[in-house]
Every structure is written in C-alpha cells, then in structure tokens.
Amino acid sequence: MGNTFGWGIVGLNLFCRWANDSEIRPLMGRPITEERSGLCDPLTWSRVRPAVDISNRFLAESKTDPDGHRKIDAVLIDSLGNGFPASHCHGTRNIARCVFENTDLSRARTALERYDSLLVASHWNARLLAKATGRQAKVIFEGVDPTLFCPAPKSGLMDREKFYIFSGGKVEFRKGHDLVLLAFKRFHERHKDSVLVTAWHSPWPQAGAGFKGRLAAPVTIGPTGALDIGKWVHENGIDPLAVIDIGFVLNPLMPAVLREMDVALQPSRAEACTNLSVKEAMACGVPVIAALNTGMKDLLNDENSIVLKNQTAISERLPCATEGWGESDIDEIVAALEFTYEHRERAKQIGMRSRKWLIEHGRTWQFHADELKQWIRAGA
Image 1: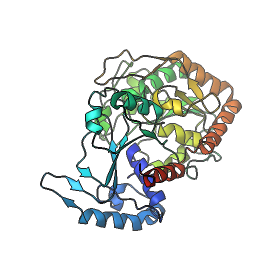
Image 2: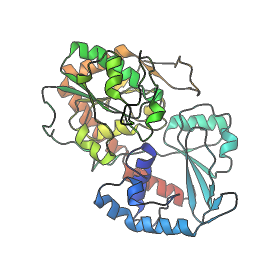
Image 3: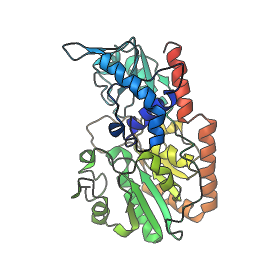
Image 4: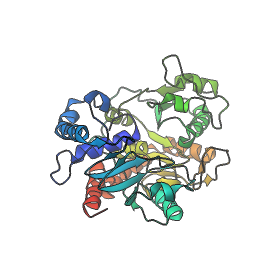
C-alpha cells in the first residue's frame, strides 16, 4: 500500500477500511513499515497501525518452501497486471485481481487456471477474459474517498485570471500525454490565459523516458532523476511558462491541487479500470474531459463529463495488443476545452453532477471495500 501509485492507493484504501472491521482481517504480502508505505500523515498511520502489526506478525510466521513458494492460511487476492505474472503465494482460496491493458490473452487460460475466482475493475476486462478463458470475472469498480476529494472554495494561491487545465497520470503512450500537449498547444495559441497543470511523475521515471507519441521530441530524464517536463514542452513548441509541473505529489495532497482547476483532461488510449485521476477530479467537482473507450465506458456519460466520443483504432505499432483501445481526435479535445472556457458555469454544473453521480453509483472506496468483503465471504 502507498500514496504514490495506483496499486498502492487501492491497497491503502482497502487496508484502511478493513483495519477495524470485525468481520475481516487484512494482510499484506510483504512487511509494512511507516516509511515504506508512503503514509506521511500520522492520522492514517494510527488508523491502520494495529492491523499492520497483525499483518507483519502473520508474514513472519508464514513458511516458505525451498523453491520460494509460500502457503498461507488465508484467502489470497493476487494483484496481476499485464501478462498475469506468476505468484509465489498460495492461499486457502485464490483470487486473481486482473488489471490489464495488453489484450494479447493467448496465455491467460493457463496463467489463471490455478485461481478459484477472477476479479476485475471494468466490464472491458471482464469481456476480454471471458473470451480468452471461458470464465466469468466478478466486476467491482474502484473508488475514491469523497471525504478527502471534495469540492471547496479555491484557496487563492493560483492567479484567478488564469484558466487552469489539469492532466494526471504517469507518462506513457497509453495515457495520451502527447494528445494533451498537442491539444493544449493549439488551445493556448487562442487563449494566452490558459495554463496546463501536470501531475505526470511516478516512482518509475525511466519507464516514461523516451516517450513522444505523436510529438516531435521525446521526454527525457533531467538532472534530478525525474522526467524533465519543462524541457519536453519547450522542445515541442509550447511556452514552458504556460505549463506548471507540480512534481511528485502524494495522493492525499491532490485535492488541494484539483480544487484550483477549471477542467481536467484525460484522453487515455486505454484504461483497465476507471481512471483514478478522473474520479478524483470528479469527486472535487471539477468538470472532466475524457476519452470514451475501454474501462472508461463504465464511468463516463453525457451527464457527468464531457465525453470524447470520436475514438479510432490505434495505428501505431506497439509491443502489446490494443483491442478496444481508442485514439482521441485533437479537434474534439480542443472543442471540449473551448466549451469549458466559454461556458464556465455550465462546466461547473457538470463537475458537481459528476460528484453526485459517483456517490449515487457507489464509486467510493468504502463501497468498494464492502462489496469486495461480501463477495469474499460469500465464497468468491
């Protein structure tokens, strides 16, 4: 669990909500320390500390055979990404939590046959698994913490005369940051008061280095070891003063950033789940422009977002299969930005409707934890 990447945020929120639940005991697959977990606030750490101690003792007492395999007396939920890499643990019941964008599932049946149940976070992933394995996966949507991510007045820290566009997620082809920059370049030429605010860093900067997509110049790692976003935008013809790179921000601090924004832009080519950055913006009442493809079809509609509906097949050759992925149209992105710029009150109304929609449709971490617990206790 942690505050700096998607899987960690899922683990942290589940652990927090089960830590004091008398019906279930959460355990982690590796030791947890305050430093390692990335939990900076003492309140969260105090909330989970008793369960952390139990989890760490359980791991210390579990046995590992000479081949490195561990048998545990508990229900195991394995976090499996692209390719479903083999786990070294085996539980009393075994659940594969499958989150994948690579649609080459030729080995899925064999890789997943050891698991009693399959769990996914989108109907897109569920349909692909059913086609590849003949098995039905349980769909439980990921959530957001509406007590942390919530609307509030702007702090006044940012220039109120500017128009702020937020874009989040680690740099990679799938996230469509090249599309963000191409659209912003055109939009900023018309509206010099516009500012792009980026949260594009991750614990693995080397994974994004060299990416350029449809841009002329690739992103590189700077002298600090992080991706040099300022240099990247400059080399692609965008005024660096029109872009604010907020750096590496822990998840609990993101609401303060999002509440300053006028719109969030996420033209992802693929999302295995329903993008965390998008839901967090929606929960803060920020209008969202996002691509209607893959897992995002379980989240977006004309009432709760500004949907990028013009999605074409991926033409670029990639080291993975891209069935269902979508390429957003730059003209449509710019038009959506123009709408939010020219009709700010209407855009704000969309943002507030999106928060209401999330809560009414159970897209919270508490609902996620409750549904997952019930499913596990029912036999998964």
